[in-house]
Amino acid sequence: MIREFINNNDITFEKGNRNPTMITLIGYSLYLNLNKEDLENELSEEIKKDDFLQEEIDRLWTYCYDRNYDTPWRKGDYKSNFKY
Image (cartoon, rainbow, N blue to C red):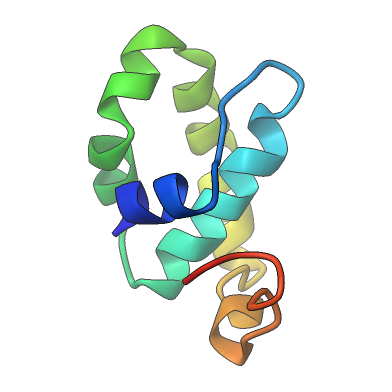
């Protein structure tokens, strides 16, 4: 489902955009009840090309989890910004 979300929303992993991209993907993953390892597996090819993505997942996962970054997704707050 993460791959479909990335493709449907033209998500990129460009330098300068990786932090907000990872926050978005972590929040969406939490909404899908995925764990950190699930997201890492989904992004394995991207992580191989850019190890900074792994650093961002490691740094942000618990932060986003503890702050309920899945809640806006559950409430539908992002329906106007993303296809999901």
